[in-house]
Image (cartoon, rainbow over all chains, first blue to last red; front, side):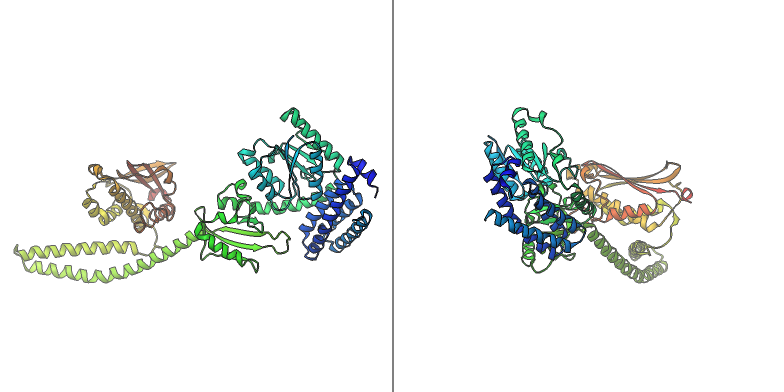
Length: 105
Length: 506
């Protein structure tokens, strides 16, 4: 991830941006866990709410890949394709894991 | 420098807003949901509040309305900061908000936030656009629209069912109330939200609620029909349901108002009781009738045999007179106890009224009430169930009697009851109006619309059932007639019974 470029686009200091992304990763970890629980319980409304919140934060930070994944989670859950939802959540989780490596936290 | 409160459930948003606003020299407070925001607002009055719309427990919309309902927060500048504002065509002014900024990439959002705050410094109301700022930067509109559509269906359902629905947090704070719940509880929504569930109940019910909630983790709990709770003068039953699957562990409470159901049940019980009493009375009356005619017959024989004016003869006359009285009472009893399903028959109001007065006249005179009855002999017959009309008259007379006796002693010389009849015409329909005019205590204006309600009574416990007028009302209605009241508290009551005339009816 090019933090310098991203932060410049969003008008933030680089360290500030990194801090926010770190927070995003931290929060998203527990969100993912809650998403997995919600999928197990077929709790569509809750999946929708969590995905909505992830979507917002990804959009705020200009994290387009995460934004697309969050949108897919929301649509597939709404259409009842929970298998697809679960797969996308897993992709999200892996991607999050990679970012953790990138940031070194 | 401004004191700013930011309410949003995503930590990234809170952190970003904090650093953005602190850099501009403002003091920033944050809250992750509506309830925590309300907690902060108990002790702090910020200059500006930013509110997200989609949040756990109390939604942003509700939060805005609550804020605007509190006088001390009237002046606060309220900004909605939301991603769904555009899709939902949010009427943020209707929520009580002053501005609305769409969520999006931080740079665009930051521009809108900063410029809104700057406008605020210069020209308060004028310069703030009454439209959503930054809507062009929104993504994924379609998806959320679908989500909203399904939410709207749920909302329509919740808004229109007759059961009250409350949602509570784990800590029993109310975070949602549908319109039915608001009307059952009788507290405005703005006050209801964030209130403690316990405080809705009378002290005597709080312990029971506590006990129910203790065992709530196991399964849902009910307050049933056998022992309903009182709330806002209504009788309600509860169904308390824990939502285990939700990580916030909310509790749903379904409220049902069973006041009228209970009343109907009591009314039915009463009717059954009256029927039993009626049957009993009829039996007793019949059994007494035979020996009474025996007594009268034998006394008359003795009198015949003893032609001279003696003391014995005088006693015999008294025996006959008293026995006649018993026979009259029995006749009246029978007329009440007779089968309710009999057909209407032509009858004369004058006859019905005199047989009713026979039951109560003595008591009125004993209590020093001047009774004047003026019924013309020329009234036409009307098609009625006589014993029912007799019951109506008796109820009205009893009420007049009671009202007259309640009047303070110094007015005792002015205590009268006047009864008369006239023929009236209304829309080509002729009817007989029987008027009962008493100078009793009258009826207070504020209860006038309730006096025909079942179980409404102003008499002390044990003195009245509250059924007299409601039954009378029902009877008069069944006869296609009307019951009219005119009264002035402390002065008089006029009750008019209008009954259609036989000929015009068929």
